[in-house]
Image 1 (tube, rainbow, N blue to C red):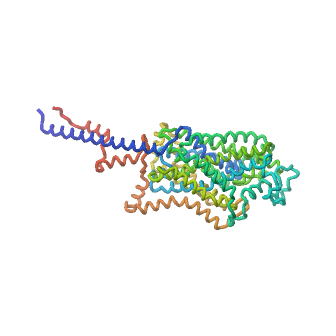
Image 2 (image 1 turned 90 degrees about the vertical axis):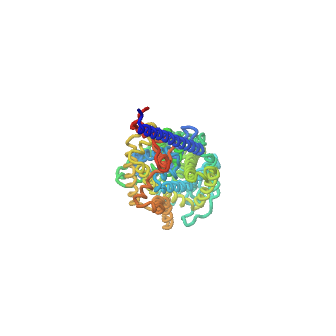
Image 3 (image 1 turned 90 degrees about the horizontal axis):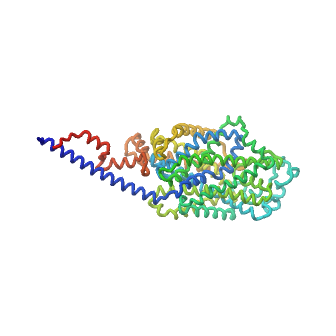
Length: 632
């Protein structure tokens, strides 16, 4: 006999199952619509046409002019082999883990450098703003080096069979102080004559730069260099106007061809007379320097600068990968290639320095110079010693030109991607026009640096805008926010799920503890041992220029705490500081399809049906298991 209570109970249970099925249907429809919308957005955003395109782009951006002049000079400055020790320590503890973190996070989120930290912790959106401003500064001055390089490349052909810097009779020379580096040892002026200047150095200072004596006098625009600047920006635009991810074949050429030239130069450099003396100086450590702060500061700074971390470039490149792309493999390969390239160019440079020192009857200390001087004085001096010097000059500056351009267009792409991701509605449909306008603006901002006193401005930008203390500050905040906001161990699990492989605990330990502590210590050392920069080791910048330099650095650094304060002010209605902190460190990103953790999906699910969470498969199974159904 069927009881009335059983009939009512069965009716409620059937109704419950009907509601569950309806709710699941709504949820599935919402999820399907969300997946379709997300897929459409990714298709519109674009992606790499070939898996190896991403690897080539990483090599392009991380292997740049810093490998050619910055690394060799810092190695010389800090005692050769003594510099290599902190350099490799920085590579293992910070360089590789942070490089991998940036690429993997950009790939997981599918967003560029301006937005990826802010979607993990909204309160720290300032990290993205700081990164974008730093890469903007780099875009302003980096193409100036390209313009100088292009000008030297052209000059390699104007005086065949000679080179224009192998003379003391040019209109730019001062015959009373000029001497030729190609003279026999007995003819070289006595080194005690302080005012003697080589023809190569006079060509750089008095012909290429036509340099004034002080930053207070910028002089006139160097129209030849300005024309090369325009050509450089035209080349950059033509490469990225469709988006860097659509420029695969160009990336392959710009990433691989320079290594052909590097190998040729390496073979020639190590066979020069005196090369062994230079290479010995490169690998011989001056152990007493390891007890000073300089090798450690420069070693870590060089790793960050060379690997392009903290500037939003790597997340932007990674964001164009497919969700399951093996970016771990590419990150390791790129870091090893970058360091290997630095060692190769260091070997070439020191071999050439050894040759120059022997041929000029000087020491390596006498012929080594800082910054652009290493590129435009030491190497042009070296090619004069080679048979067929115009050909060697064209080969060398052609290689430098390609290396510079491939780094530049990756940096510009990082800026474009970051801005387009931050303002997708307005900029994504107009990406090509925005790219054109950005290139024009960056070119115009670079004009003061192609004036006669522009090299002084260039050195300020190179030293203060996106290296040293500024980069350490931004990368430290970025590393801490990404790892600790997502929770201890959660970030590693997310990346492991994306790559279908276990991530070493070593990376987690570096992300969470070692890298932040080491970078903080280096930051403190940097501040404690700070010394104002000098141009060429002799010109001291006036106080107002030093103030501007620090304002350039602070303009990026202040964005992180500044935006955090702004976030607290506009969210004061939320409640206490603790509640605002919780809101500011709660992820809001919408991860790509297939992600292990997507806070936006969890939030959507909890808002369906007037805030009542929809039942999951587990909750439905529990209901079935606990239901008491009496069949009639």
